[in-house]
Length: 301
Ligand SMILES: Nc1ncnc2c1ncn2[C@@H]1O[C@H](COP(=O)(O)OP(=O)(O)OP(=O)(O)O)[C@@H](O)[C@H]1O
Image (cartoon, rainbow, N blue to C red; front, side, top):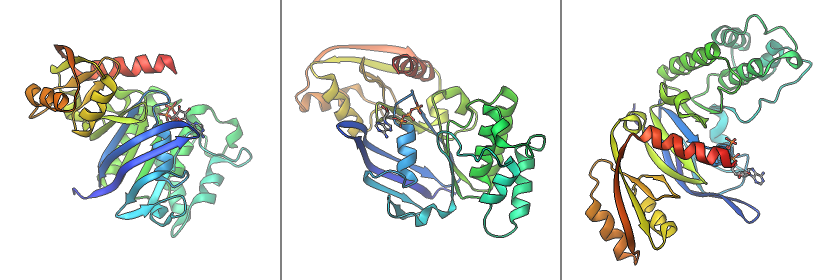
């Protein structure tokens, strides 16, 4: 299976004067788990809301080749989502809430199946107002998976889950993926998705800084070039447009990927009028550098 299920092209979003998403482009293959990684405030939730047609946006988003917009929700019929906090009715039990949202055929069975799959039996009959954060989160995930969607969007689904519940959720996601379900899952912690994501999209300040496979991302001993130019912002834009992987924007750090040529990179920048003041090579592993970037951004938020 390698057909493109989700396609995001030139996605822009501003709230007032604040540009929150800046030309986001990426695709998701059917049956893959895509990790959307970024620090707090990077733009992950906004991307998810745009995909779900909850927000107006500029650009083009298609699910299964059908365009989605704030006025066009048809392709979302086979999409399940948990965004931010699950919207729960405090005076209903988990089971009652699941029943309320179960649609189509075999509604009762779907509810029983999801309770079993998420191991919610021991609290499914309590009112949700008494739930802990982890129980609420589980029910939220249950609601997203309830109607056997083809595509599932989960915003920080591990939030509030203890290590055992995190593992159970990871196992469940992998199990659902085997049936062909596509997942887009956000996290600000790379290691949470490390074991399950096939592909990774790293978001920093509303831009995609890395779009690659998890294996590629984690491959150790990658090399980087640290560049100092007379205009790092413009240099970053040019490099991103030309599909270079920028690991850190504040100290312009470019990852050495397959077919990378420093000669081509320098020629490209020089041809666009960028002056290079300094260039250094650095060894390291991308995960570490990435975590450093995200940590730094996280402490700012
Ligand atoms: N409705 C809104 N009005 C104004 N600004 C908003 C709104 N929604 C989000 N933002 C801003 O957009 C930026 C991206 O927010 P978003 O929630 O998408 O980030 P995130 O990567 O999901 O972060 P987190 O991990 O904290 O949820 C932030 O600076 C946030 O303050």
